[in-house]
Amino acid sequence: MNLQQKILESQKKLKIINKNKKEIFVKAKFGPSKITKIPLHLNEEMAFFIAAIIGDGHLKKSKFQVKIEMSNELIMNDIKKICSDLFKREFNIHKVKERERKAQSYSMCMDSKAIHNLLAHVYEIPIGKKSHLVKISKHIFNSNKSIKSAFLIGIMITDGGRRRRQVGLSTASKQLWKDLIKLFREIGINVLKDTWIYKKYNKEYYGISFKAENLKILMRRCRSGQTGQILLDKFNF
Image (cartoon, rainbow, N blue to C red; front, side, top):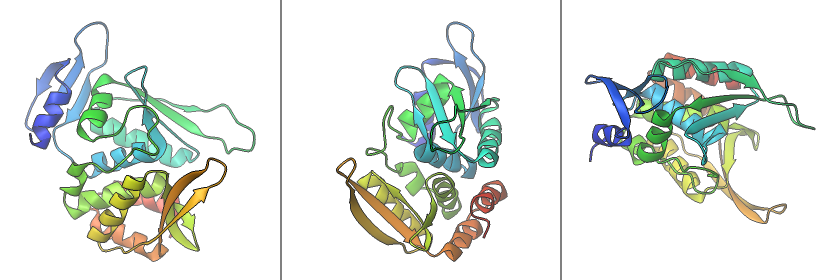
């Protein structure tokens, strides 16, 4: 089953309102619901969005909702715009109630069975708690370098930051760690890797790091100026 067939399969329980070679428009078969556009291909913006959900989002178990939360309001608004372009839906950003010793954060909840199914059944994002289970979809690995770079930009603006006097990230998922090392190498960035035990949870974590100047490789490889600008907003290099 190719990518387009998998996407159509993920939407089979919804009502198709319109369809062309690039996208379908769907809504719930019963009850009131908003029409959602679902792209039938993987582009840079979709790859970026998938990575952002892997980094700072999750798919709810109890409802067909996708939620993302982060402390950078500017980047959250950038993600909102990408969602509007991808799905032709407008989602609201809300301030999260302040928590002791934590920066103010912002959340966006996407109440959409169509998007939930797309992420879960096509792009392989686990439903519910996912930090130790998450991996990179084969569809990302099978894409071109521009799409791979957009995905890595999405990872870096959510999970990434300054690390070991360089830039990098850490994860509880060994498979994601391995996948990221491979994907970075495929676009020409060799990373340093490390592992350690987080004593508080007695759990192994996995890290990567590389020179900040290599972020420019991501921007050069990615044909989407929109996602490149978001990387600049995050790291200001």
